[in-house]
Length: 147
Ligand code: HEC
Image (cartoon, rainbow, N blue to C red; front, side, top):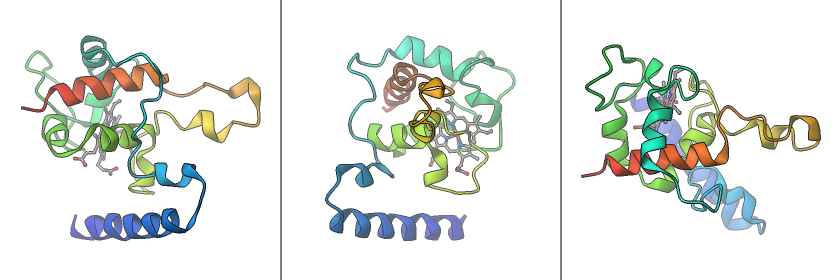
């Protein structure tokens, strides 16, 4: 865990170094994504449903959280209630979009990376695990867990 934190700090340092010299806005997106992915605000109720869904979000396959009705929750990843208190909306969004930015060996899927990877091949555009709207819904729900 300490090593991972150290890696994260190093990565943050490298990224901030890169962004301070690069002039294009794209490079600053790695560890925080400030701008919502879609214009319509996220919906807390839909976000909760996605997080608990065994078909779309699959979050509780690995994560636990304040979901008393769910008997089976994951124990391979941090409690989402705790993470939501610790992280900002921009940080949460970045995690969900592409967790490998934070940990290259993460088992957490990148929920919104395919669109970028396949930008050239139009047939694959938009084939992400979650849509931009769904990501915003999940972020809105997680933010709602803050006290
Ligand atoms: C296959 C397992 C898996 C799935 C599915 C998964 N995650 Fe994760 N997630 C992890 C692991 C493991 C971590 C710990 C950091 C790492 O290794 O990347 C993590 C980290 C996170 C973090 C940062 C936690 C912190 O306190 O730093 C957030 C936020 C998060 N996940 C949200 C989600 C959401 C929302 C979903 C569903 C849309 C999801 N995860 C699905 C495994 C998973």
